[in-house]
Length: 133
Image (cartoon, rainbow, N blue to C red; front, side):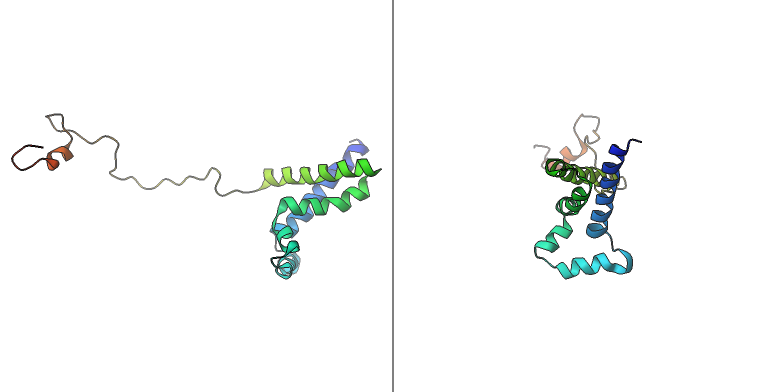
């Protein structure tokens, strides 16, 4: 593999791993949980709850290490964050997507069975006792 391509790939993997660790995992010895609790509901707490936001913050120092200049650093910063977000979306387990649980069968049907006179069975119940609707 080309060395110029290896560094950004490793960078994306590192940004994804650290971001996922801080935003979604308990971490070793519950360090990530304690950090999120300590952060509370302020700016830092909201950043730790949002993978998209946190990936920008985590990608910044990684881009600074890997970049060869300011313009390269800015592009690499956004690319590392974007790559981590794409990786998160590919690997995330969304319980809502594609999960359909069919209930047991019921007697509800779209078309009611008819009698010999062509009327649904329910239509006779609506008539008056003398046979008029």
